[in-house]
Length: 191
Image 1: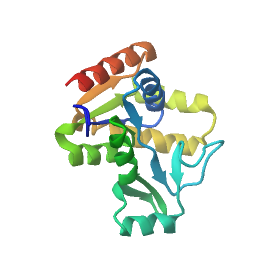
Image 2 (image 1 turned 60 degrees about the horizontal axis):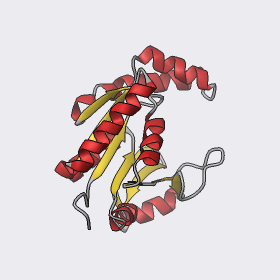
Image 3 (image 1 turned 135 degrees about the vertical axis):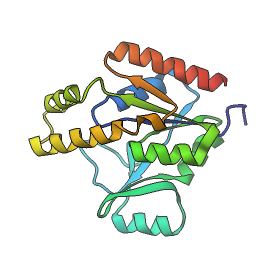
Image 4 (image 1 turned 45 degrees about the vertical axis):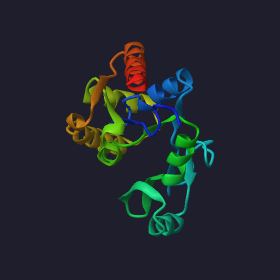
């Protein structure tokens, strides 16, 4: 195992803050990062594939695996709607000598930081303003107005937890946000 063994990088953000874009960019940039694929009990969307974007489990399979202790952390977001991190996924990344990267919601990010402590660097990606978030979600055109308002309200709540993270990156300009994120990863790798 190399010196950066057992390190974890956690990225959390309100929906629409551009977290996945940042994480995908970093995954392409740095070969020593390993992406931790989460498990979910929701159905695949679009062309999502099992084991690529998520491991898709039924709610019953999810409960079964919770009982077996297969999860590092999990949450039931609402009834029968689970998300979680599998031990097997983190072990796979460690065995490749890589840093495990989590693209995870705010609550999950805080839980993982608590679990991994000093081995983890948690990064909160901040949307420039809640209004801009609303515009981005509207521009996507995939949401109903109710669903957008629900997400915006949730984002405002999530932003109030940003001080629980080691680093905050403000994504008002994608280029500079990506550059800053690269710096954060390099520092953490060399630490």
